[in-house]
Length: 65
Image (cartoon, rainbow, N blue to C red; front, side, top):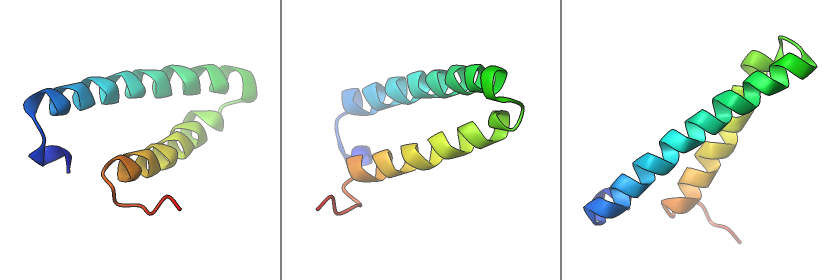
């Protein structure tokens, strides 16, 4: 579990999460401008769902078989 790891791991995770949020917001803004206004809410929702799955895998909560 991340909370039980070294401080540098937690700091790297925080940095990567902030970068991911920037990516999500920029990506969805671009998608919204090309696809239409429905993407402004749909896109972040979809990316958030995928990110939760990634984070659960990272935390060892999902069986990746």
